[in-house]
Image 1 (cartoon, helix red, strand yellow):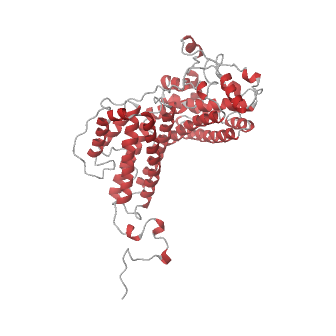
Image 2 (cartoon, rainbow, N blue to C red):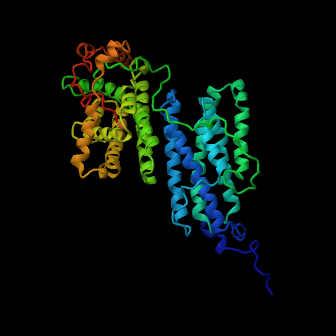
Image 3 (cartoon, rainbow, N blue to C red):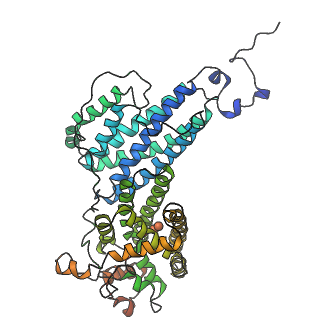
Length: 479
Ligand SMILES: [Fe+2]
Ligand SMILES: [Fe+2]
């Protein structure tokens, strides 16, 4: 009589990998989480990514440090994608995607609201990257150990992809903290970090899988509910923030200007796009009650705009230019965020981006990039163009349907944009800027790096944004 088969002795055909590569028979022969327990945990991860998305987004605008602003833009987007993946998975588990808006445990609500309200960048970094994301990573890892690798393979896949990006976020945040927070400052955060740990313990862990500690949690930073700060702030490399001394569009569309200096000016326009995440974050933070797809798509676009700004940074550096000597202004995001409603801001964004779809818009910028002879410029503008086509489509999906038709949607955008009258003179007379012409400095730096003599006509460019029509419609369009 042959030996009875056991998971340990069972042989697959010619020793091939078992179970489609998911696991060994022995690993899959153990029971795992019930569907009910699995869904309960998935809802906890979903809640965590949802709140993290909210925090990253809300803190983009007023965070002065550019590297953090762009990092938060990235991480908000990553969290939005994992929210989407978890919603999809929950809806596959005999559950309609209901109950996803419920708070899994009141202590977790306190946990995330404390981080959202962190009063300093040091606290924000520590709360996000030293506590929340590691706790989420540990929970996702625990899921992999507790569930059955065969029966729950689709959840495991969502968890595994999430962990890859959670690890990237923790790595980024840890390095930022090392650069920005010294030991003494870090030590001062101990009581608050302990409070965060008490919140997790009270909830039975971030996944709710443990026993709740039963201890009450008290709020520290979120005693007064957090209010989104719409005022964009910048670090000290960004200065003279109201400067409108160089009319980039007039330069770019001047047929007498050669392509290479035009490409340099486009890099300014790209880097200036850092004002778009600042502005879009305000729309997302202040627009409640939309379907999740809206927040996911808006966060994707926000992240694209942060990438466009970073493309400008990379382009300047590769052309030997110190961009801090240009004026990367905040005029656009400041005015939209403080003078318009979220709906008006979205309208302006759509109106501008729709304008980029013409032959003189993104296609033209790409053609200038190619003609400049700098292959990096061609790459940058090629992808910038593709991104903008996507953004126009996202606008058609989420903005236009609020109107009777496309015409009405565009007219409203036009009217909103016209509401913001030019402040060229106001900021000059108020002493906020002298509208200094920074172009010759940037152009001369590039000429040195290119080993070329400056073209006197290009060097002499001095058109400002003064004298443009009173509304800002034709000038300084970001997006
Ligand atoms: Fe853009
Ligand atoms: Fe865009």
